[in-house]
Image (cartoon, rainbow over all chains, first blue to last red; front, side, top):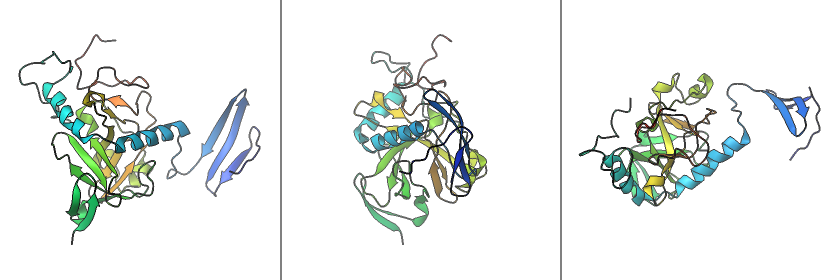
Length: 97
Length: 164
């Protein structure tokens, strides 16, 4: 990892198009400004990591649970075991528009 | 000739090349895996599988988020949309990835990282939404909306409670 010390109003360039500027340092918080072309996506790291974590968790899907999910859908909203939610139930899988 | 490949869950597949979707950036955490196909769930219902062409055991359950969350929005910038060859979000197909544990009531949807698919050009990308209230673990069925952060959405699978 490249380590640089920067102060307020100083910045770094990443390539020729991405600029990261220190706007303010206050206590244990640093405010950063980022200038990047629209093709470069900029996100807080924890958001990125949380999506990655869910993607990894999603790979281990229990296919047999989907049959149970279909039962829950057929039963309709408010899936309490004793709640029969009407006769036949409305089909929640329709009218997604 | 079709594209022939082996999968752990679905056996040997032989699909027309036009069924193959390319994720130029992969999925988040799986950047090296670029080619997927969308398969209907063998058991039916509003579920599909995003199966990697080149990694037999890599497959994700996905669904149309609007079936469960009517107000779900995918605010993605023009430049990001153009990266998969579309101009407007409604030119694409939006799916969200599900975590499917043993107990189906605990299935969650990742509303922060939807996948947008341009079926015409067969290009797709997982986007990161910075929308306040969207969770990476939103329950499809349970009434507690999420194990993580609160979420402000109307939920199709629950009865309206007292308006807050």
